[in-house]
Length: 115
Length: 115
Image: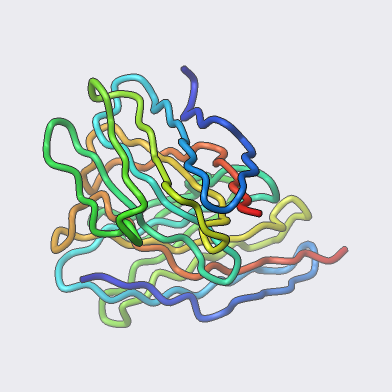
């Protein structure tokens, strides 16, 4: 596609339910990132995939959060047993190589509201 | 690990006057530095990037930034503000001590442009 696509654009869920957020990166991009943007918290790194390497999961806030990337393309971020503090905009980005000289292209985000 | 500090959370300028957004970074190695802009309800867009080439970097929409290693700064400037420049701006750093993909975002500077 022309850009990074995220779905859904908005998600309202009840506390305790599981949610899945999807990211379609730009075709051919080997690196994929998930960030979270909350009011008062800025942009927070969650997880980073680079090619076939083991992902850098150091930003995941708890074991309720997990992500996978199938076939080096589409990624799914899963939040289990959602809590109100999980409410945020979840941003996905991709870059061609994930190295210093390449820019990250961001999707429009998924706004998650936990009620 | 790297970090970045945006010195102003809000900047208000009159249309046609210069814009200065200040950013200081901390990095153990030669960093890559970026400025991203986020317009209301829009995704993050790259304005410009520094990756150890020229220290004065020109970006889109008339913005530029100067990398000053001695001051560990990467301030963003524009000679003449437009109404369309009203947005939130993020200074971002990455370096090799962390995975290159772990972009470290500043807290953001909200720019207001008055007629």
